[in-house]
Length: 322
Image 1 (cartoon, rainbow, N blue to C red):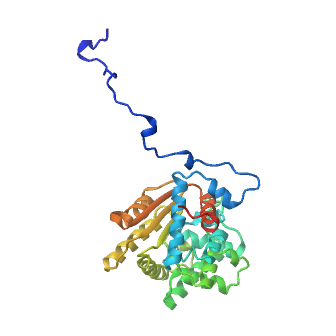
Image 2 (image 1 turned 90 degrees about the horizontal axis):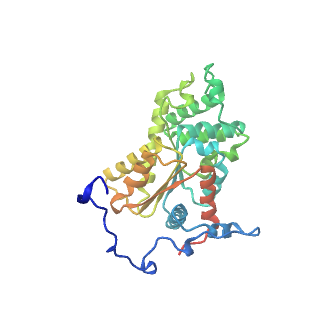
Image 3 (image 1 turned 135 degrees about the vertical axis):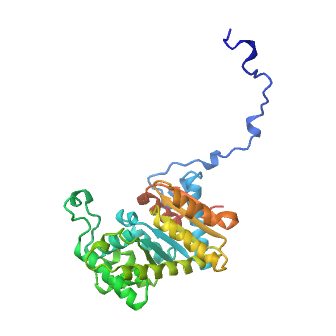
């Protein structure tokens, strides 16, 4: 006998109601399952073979909304962190730019550093652990000189930091310019806005740094981003790729600025691509701007070097989902 006595007995299960399994609606069926691919399968076959579940569904929907935005002539804005450049995705994004699936880029300061170094010398991403101890981290002369002189010239001409840096790289006739997002955007007249945190990038401690110029050109770019976000109304898309703090905060402020000025901002699509889903991207990109029926937000988890080429393949070769 239980130590609890007869006052506490286990529930009797004889009267539990059940139903036939075949009568129950289910979220997953064989129609959703993945299909094996063959040695002769095309990229289109591969994409069609993926399971129509969770992340794949989100990827299909984001791609469909990007196609729709292109058809409607609405902005498709890519918010980028530096990691996207460091894992070698510039050629993929440049190709999507040419195909009309990138109509604007918003970048944090690390993108400027890595993209400029790729354009100038074809390599980037120094070994911080090996150089920090002797105080040499971030001290590459050409990088600091280029970014800071571009900021001064941008302030002089009343243009944003992204445009000024793209112009400076083009003027250098950099050997590897074809691999640079800044160069590609400038040549194509695609807006490239740069959003820095002063003190957060290596160029900011170089002798040539000018805080007023950095602040003025970055603020110009914030206002340009605001105009781009305003144009998203009625079908635009914003992707946050690899920025956990700066760009999610900027996008949220641009959204509230647009609405504060009395402009409509609805029927938008937002998505966060990252290998972990952090608070700010999920809150400030995926959820808050699309709340109350203003749009739809998605989070796609995975390494950028896998997820962004997969998105590109879906945009170029994928079959429209019914």
